[in-house]
Length: 310
Image (cartoon, rainbow, N blue to C red):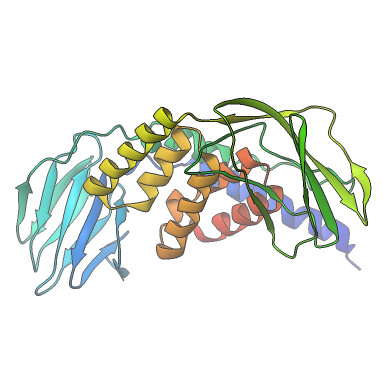
């Protein structure tokens, strides 16, 4: 009779081996972004199975796009920001980083505003990151929190992963402390108020029935942005929204300026609206790592590995 533990070990090892192989053969960054599709616009990875594009879509090497009667879309080159319009009853393929017109008409449009693609610069890095699964969560109670978290008046929410509905928490920031009662929510969210710009030490203490069961020895760091910094970010986001109308790019910009919680919220909403965009999922997984969300990170990794090769 096969030992169940041994079977589980070999099954898990096989999953990790396959996952590592998938990520080692990682994709290059998507050269194009498709936006503002109207009518019936579809894409395919192999020119056989076609899926309707309902919102924005990153286009990778060898992807096909086709429009039908009374449908069109806009395509942006992610490096040059050149803008193209794919007219109705047309078909293209992304080939060698360029657009090859198979049939129909692709016309040039006005160039979008130059905005650095922060997400593209670290595409390979976060793809490689997904290959590194850490060991199973320790049975000992330990709460992972962000070593550094940047907040502002626009984005005042600090978060951590809930260890379970039986636990309560004490958030300690410098000389102040805040009590957070037991919650069913998988993510604990707490909005800070009346913070002055600057850097503050913080930690999260875990309690059960009022008794302290985990108190980290080291303090982490909160950075609260000034109004000037907050306004600059707000202006940049307005520019991104005007040029791209894309939650993912907004999320990645927020991540780049250190607003990890806001970035996570935008990534989650993006993937809720674009569940087929599996190739970009490592960005959300990476945010979970930065915020210390071990269970979320692990679960999303498993889903990513199960879906990426379909």
